[in-house]
View 1 (cartoon, rainbow, N blue to C red):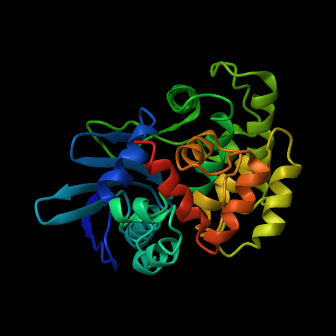
View 2: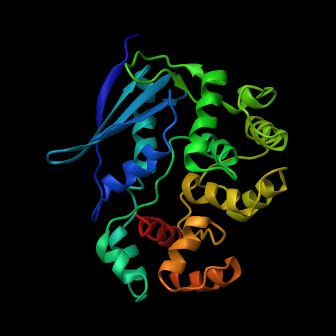
View 3: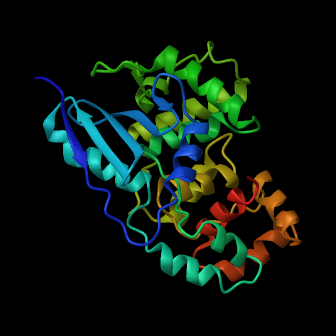
Length: 289
């Protein structure tokens, strides 16, 4: 069966800051599974019946996207993954209006009126990469994740000139030595334990999952703290009301705005941005340039 390519309908309401979104995703892009160039972002996704490569770009008349699927039965799911990754089902005008009622947030909304939450093509992948990225820079996390893909990723089932693999499945990592990755032993153990929990269904990353229960399950795993659990909820489960009070970028942005930045104080400040605190985080991050 030959791969087939189909366009993806990127219908959305309100503005779409696709340039910022793609830059966010691309800056975290992992060699072998993701690529960002001047005008487009693409990545591989393992799906139920085969692999897919999705591409998103800024065309002359607006954003365009397509999916190349190994098996046509996965075409609809590939489209769903892209829509979630770009957060296109959110009414960002309503979000922006709510956040702009705060005088401190208003200039950020005015500058970038259509910020959305950069989602993920695969919540399990996001969770594992969040653990990899603990206590290292974005560049460092990319390097470590690239080593993981090279060592344990599966060869991409579709020929692509730029992409070679799909991200390792949780079952591939549950008992892996991870010796090639160059991480502390505690973090390797955290990745293995999380991967095992994802593989056997102890942890289910689905937007329909009870968020409080899931957070407790994640934090109960060794090496996973509140920041990681909340980051997964925000980017992996489409939770609109997560605030990363301990995040270094969030704290720097709050300081820049003249707001309290210590985590406990920052969390109190964030109450005025409910129920859209995940979007407030995007605006805070974007304010850093």
